[in-house]
Image (cartoon, rainbow, N blue to C red; front, side):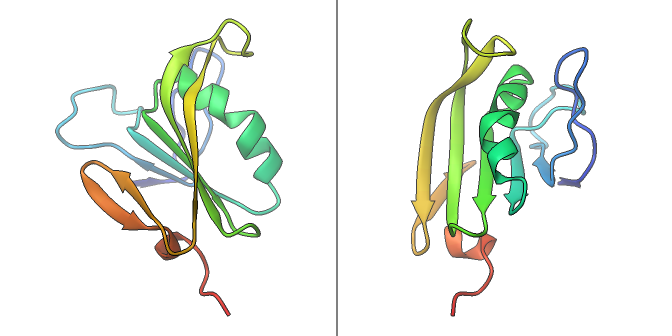
Length: 120
């Protein structure tokens, strides 16, 4: 797990995701990640409209946006080539998970609530 450490995403981009997870069993570039998590409040629009193309270009398998105000976990997956995107890559699947639901990663089920502030 890396916290706010640059991730290599093409020749001209090095975003600093809030969290990046690289699985030990993978022998890929140590500056890559299988899961990137952005915790979004004021950056929500940018995290939804720009960063997916950057992380897809970097071949990040899963990109999660934790929408604090909407209390939603958005899961981007299945990076594919996309000539219409600014980077030539995008995600084919986007799923939204609400409070009380689970999201899967690396064979584990994770509670959306664990990524959000306490409700109430």
